[in-house]
Length: 52
Image (cartoon, rainbow, N blue to C red; front, side, top):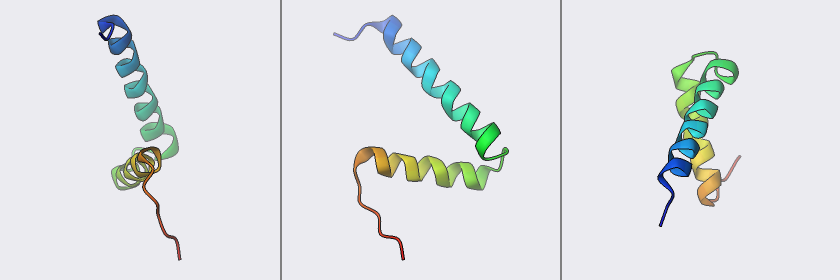
């Protein structure tokens, strides 16, 4: 069973991190933010990527 308080805190932390990435790293550029978020999801899920 998942602790609802811990789950809420984790969700809040992830939202804070992505908001920070959006503002600081991507300078509110939604195209860059969308790319970085998609790339990060692929890396975390273990999908291989090929770079040429």
